[in-house]
Length: 300
Image (cartoon, rainbow, N blue to C red; front, side):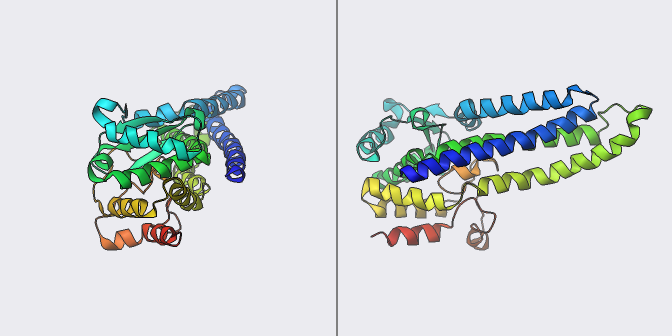
């Protein structure tokens, strides 16, 4: 566990560094295109560092706001509150995560936060309605495993940063193509270059985001599954939960490509059997449910 935690902390630092460099490059060219002159590089560094800092310290609040999540209460969500309380004893965590619920029919869940002391577990109402006690226990144990292994820091920070890079690149491209730049004689020729650059950013940013998310490694889902069984001593509960989550065809309304890697299963559903078979390809943020279930059965 401690080796995985150290590795994840190091990867977090490396990816944050990469993010700062990439965002600095993007913002620098935006500032240069807007004719900010010598202040372009300074402004780019300030924006990229400020964004990295806010992503690290406020990523959990940002992700929760995207999902329109509310705090869980004993009055409305007693079962899931009790499950979390019971699992804390065997989880190895000294701080209990805050528990949130988002109104959505798709059964799903994720954990977020920069460390175990500031961790959050969020579940959908669909998860609470469609899973029994032992299945819910398996899902919550899986999310506690991500917290214990420090997966949450990397996944949350990357999700916010990738989303910001895509947003900035998209905005830049729109400004260029809709003629939002100064078109005097000195810069008119340069605008064509920046239009091409904006198109390149628009095309490459989603690819860059996917590569950053894949850097989280799908092996962590297998590790979280096995750690969940260590916590619950009941692989059948998690196996049954994964089967139900895979079979459900509801779309998660609040899901987006930047945060998809955070969920216990891919929130983007396909209505065809062929689409489900292809749900774990080279670019998938999750291993296939079949592979995860097979791995869990091998633990018995």
